[in-house]
Length: 183
Image (tube, rainbow, N blue to C red; front, side, top):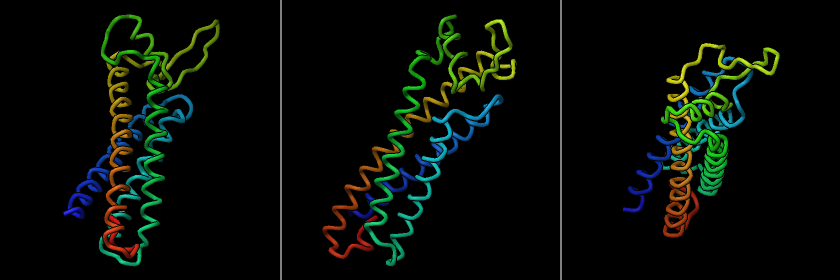
């Protein structure tokens, strides 16, 4: 029974990692001036690493040669990456306030946020142009909502990563051998 629960948790972890990867890559593609922010790039890395670790964890169910300790350590590392990425995105979006409020102040905050504006370029006299000059408030709202979904799924990945480690530990203690007993 525990192994079925562990497989379900691993499936949710895989899905969460895939969503994080997709959202982070989509947000990075909106960067038109300069490189994507570090928070977005790290989210892409955390998502890709989470997908890889989840696939290795699923393979460990069927391949006895994959050591349970290796999978458990990889799960712990992926969980740490998810938590770090989620915290970084949360802090970077803290100044935005609201993604959907159309008050001028919130539009300004969204426009000035490095995760949302596509990059800014100084044009002189204390002025700058962001997003190639063609960014709308609707674009900013959509990007903000994607960034919020990204950090939510990173937190979900962290929670399910911890859950799979706990379940794996229980299964390891029951199985006694260190290999196939970890999911």
